[in-house]
Length: 406
Image (cartoon, rainbow, N blue to C red):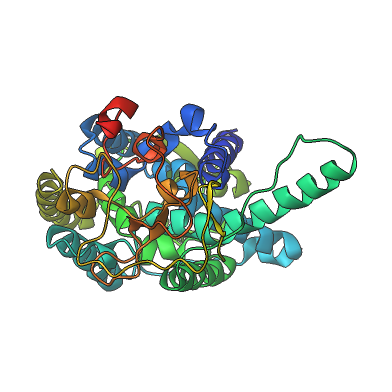
């Protein structure tokens, strides 16, 4: 029952967040925009302490359910892994326990937090999960979605129906497209072969939440008196965190997917309250690591205070090119260029939502893949404040039409 509930919630969450990046009408953001704002990194950069506290408390209570239900990149890996398991029955039990690659986890976290502190967001956001999924959805999924929409529009027009209308199909800048495709291919291969390898070796958010989940009150627990060491739970664990030989679970890597509970024929694995006896010597090391990472996060949070030929559909232009600028133009509501660069997570949700295609990913190494204003395809409408409404990280503050026009 717990596994089915988790799958339903994950499917709904993944569908909602994906639709945010696919929608080109701007209507879904009114109803589903909150899905982007409950992602951990945007909440931290937006100083949305309520959301950060909620996610931290949820992890301390229930384990890494954020990774298995809320994080779209995590759910995408589950979908890929599930598809592989459906190809052949023998693939259903293809996982096995492997020791945690802590050196790699700490290296990636050590790369992620200092680059945020130093303002080198282009490096940090290459491995941030929400940002990575946003770029994949915007540069790979969205063009396919728009092609499908245009096909339906063409068919509907043949029957004098205008239930669909055509929209322009485009992808981001070449560096952004390369980064998106490379990330998708790498994550696809890892998930296809080994399940949650990305989450437990590369993802900095997974490492941070893993430190919290060591002390979660509820988690999958192995009843040693009933366990026959048959290995079914280990073979179903896509996080590779169940050591059947020693009847132990690495809670820093467990994503609370509940697959192990359903696979156990003897009822030896249950989602239950963890008493103090389940703590081990690693907890002391984990506690010290958590405090060190927490201090760095507090510091980061504190610091975080093919082309159309019509210009907006009004005047015909030809071969418009972007002039070279010393400083990029940022949307109204950005407060300042420094504030924008320090808070933007490069998820490109605003790029997808921009009705005139004015926002485009940057190709500059300084602010790589963060959006810039580009007037090659149209102009920024004075009556439009869409980007300020959809930004989940506080890079673009909500601005009214009157404020933008003044």
